[in-house]
Length: 107
Ligand SMILES: CC(=O)Nc1cc[nH]c(=O)n1
Picture 1 (tube, rainbow, N blue to C red):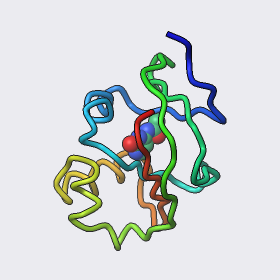
Picture 2 (cartoon, rainbow, N blue to C red):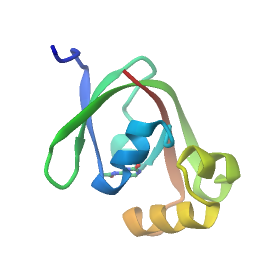
Picture 3 (cartoon, rainbow, N blue to C red):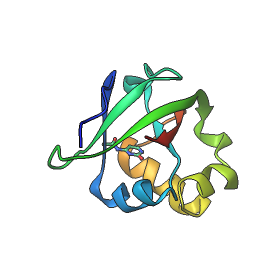
Picture 4 (cartoon, helix red, strand yellow):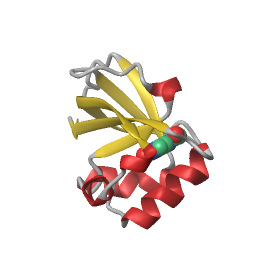
């Protein structure tokens, strides 16, 4: 099957792959270094660990979000509890005040 033409690439840790492919995870929270994505962008998705492509997505929403504003809705969109989400974000980025919420759909 031919690959979809994409505007850019994004990586996810392998541990999120199943939730992304099942539709259980519909957002990703990134730091400023990945705040350049725009609504409508079609992204090729690969694993961070091995750069293995596993899907393509389209960005449907991008918004700046304070870490302290994380709520149960964001957690549900990540298929986590709020406590789990805060711990995962802190594990990835350390102490971070400003996040960029990227909502996407599977292509
Ligand atoms: C590789 C990487 O940064 N992966 C991330 C970071 C934050 N959220 C997420 O879903 N995936």
